[in-house]
Image 1 (spheres, rainbow, N blue to C red):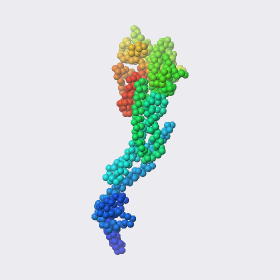
Image 2: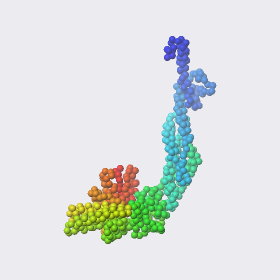
Image 3: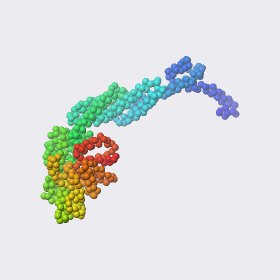
Image 4: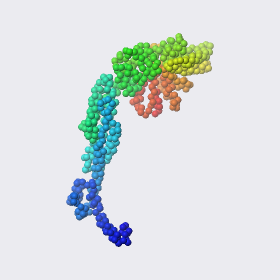
Length: 587
């Protein structure tokens, strides 16, 4: 190109032609230069060159390019080029190994003190960083080992791969041990739990020693390159994890035993249950957990000697017990006195119902309603409505129901006047619930009068939820108690203390759902109310539970629920005699 450009300038043309001649003469030696001036060439490669050309061509400090040209190496260049190319690939692998090593030079396990335990735990931030390096380098090292050019560094690369795999194993097992230790450490910090599980407590003490010594060694030299190569570290952590698995198994068996004794524990998480079981000495410290086991018992009425005389709801409604209960008799077994509390709750509700029933005819209704617990007032109010409607249905004049409808309206007016007066918050809630059901009772009585119902076997009457006081069968010792009837289905009142809860306004749709669900219950089936969100399916089911005096547990289903969690729930429901309401079950 330059010879053409300088065609008219003789001097420049001569210079360009001279340069062109030199380049043309040097061109055959370019391959030799690139082959021998490779930064990746090592002694082993010059030995291979010597085998190819028949003599040593290893350069020294005074070797020049002319020396190499004079040796006439052109015929050997194809084989020498192959050796040089291999040297380049090997050099690239060597640089990768060096780079990987340099990334670990400053990597350390960061430890953070854990509460008042006197030891530390792995910090999450450093774990993420180390894991990211491991993920990247393990893949790269595996790729390098598969390369045909790795042979000169194979031992070193395998050693490095072994380090990475060991570090990954140590990190994985350490995090598992740490997670399990964090869960179990506060549990076995309780002397009460230690006494109840001595074998597991001893085992945990040994694991605790291993965990603390591992942390101490790491704090001495936290560099990953050093710490993960500690003798027997991986084996010690694996043994610790196996021991923790056995401890967890023993702990679950222990909790299962407690749940089988007191079935409401099935509805608590392991952590909540352990909090309760750890309070064996002071029953007062169990009180904050009562709401997890009972719908409405917020606390118990203890005297100075820690003897229980009654139960108190979240609305501060006190329901006295007919007999007292001393938790000390359980000798530290929380589940034992909680089981007795459940039994006493039912006895107390039945006792209050029986006494309120006797008092009802003797005291003005509006005064009577303020003297008894809210759920008792509703139960007895509905019971006397049932009895009086049946009496008036059978009135020979045929006008009995119509007259009684007027009486219901008068009673409702009295209650409304009472609500307008000066009442406590508790009394207002109780009267409010009673008014809601009185309105429905009055409406139903008016409907019966308009339909001209003249027999207690008429479907319009049988379809109502009716309360009776009757003797139970021998399965319940033959004692008298409340029963609820709807159509041909008969249910014993559950006597679950439900506090002074508000009741839903009863609509024709509510009545139909009640009929459907009680019909299903009568055939030992379940019910599945369907409808758009927010229309009251769950609340109606809960309200029917309140009407029957039954505990209703509501579970919001999600894809996290598996057959094991469902099994736990059904175990609890079947043993506690409670209802389970599964929201969003189609998920």
